[in-house]
Image 1: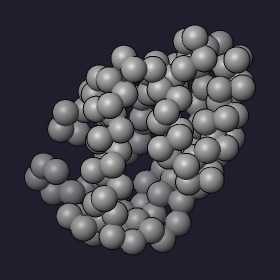
Image 2 (image 1 turned 60 degrees about the vertical axis):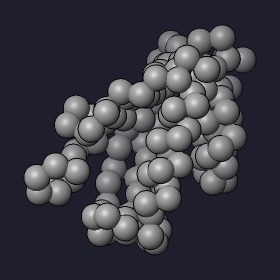
Image 3 (image 1 turned 120 degrees about the vertical axis):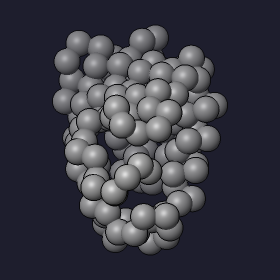
Image 4 (image 1 turned 90 degrees about the vertical axis):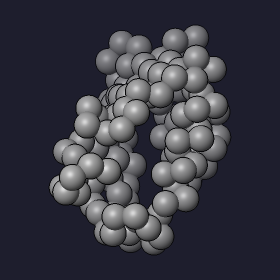
Length: 125
């Protein structure tokens, strides 16, 4: 598959709410990197990345909205704008826009980095 095809499939799955299938597109040794300042901001391995996503999703009390944009391709990378408006169990309602950058090798996502403004949550998370 081309990077465009991987990106299109990934975005389609995300828009349909099929995040388990979307994470299935990650390589077993993939790396996920949140913004500096987030505890344990680098996660290695698809299994660990999926566990972190599941913990994050379980912390959502109510979804108010969100979006997944169209991918933009650059070589073996693609960028997808995403947003969320949700109430979290441990920190209340938050709205966030982010740019998600993915690296593709051998038809799989090998690296994901997320770029956003950290919410003001007082001391620590």
